[in-house]
Length: 312
Image (cartoon, rainbow, N blue to C red; front, side, top):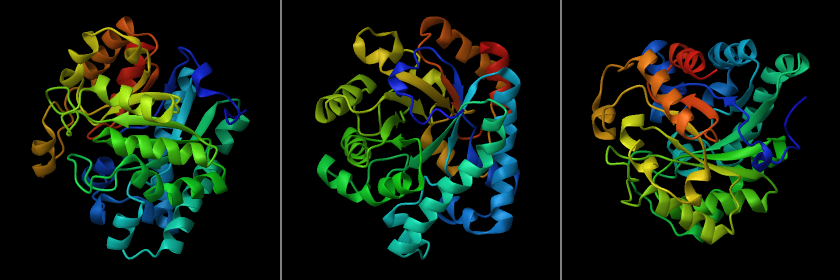
């Protein structure tokens, strides 16, 4: 069965896996050229779809072997208007690409679902600008309008939820949550942080979560942290408050390097998969509700397997 009709707020401590670092794996491990770091154009090509399928099946297989569900992302982190224009996609072509990505993910998940695995098809929304710093800053209302076309495309294609990934400031995140709500979809907000545990905007994770909840009447089903190493936010999670219970997932980087260092890197830093798994276990021991587990930049199947070994 799918989890389409399940209220994500009711999942409690149910463990769900995700994949690792899609774009970094394609570029550094597969040697693929991804203009603008965009993977979504691959969905429009047979060879590209096969390449994506090979990538995601690794992680679906790991989840199936461990008897847990999976959040299957669409490769649409760059599939918004600004990045689409840079890649030569018209508004209509971009909307079609987003819909096709959902249909492709649904088809990929079908054999696993038929065998009884719970799979959520997750429409991924990325930042309008860079994922490592605040640029093209918008108000919440502007962000809701800007990201509306993509969220509607996900709805029309039958996505189970929308996730805003690598958010650098709270206003854009709030706008995406409102856009998803307007499209009738549940939303997840995932913030990235610098080595000091703060968002690139300077906001603390607590401030960002509370701002989004205040501006959207608590619309997001839950929040996540991604594109940062656990050493960057461990100390932040030492605080107290209801906001910590709103964090349900982590997709950490393999490397402990800063965003600036990663941005300038010409080689992949895979870090230590076993150490990363142990850090996830320590986090889970403290916060059992953090149960959506996956990776971001530099992580591959080794890291997700290590996380499973440590946590499951």
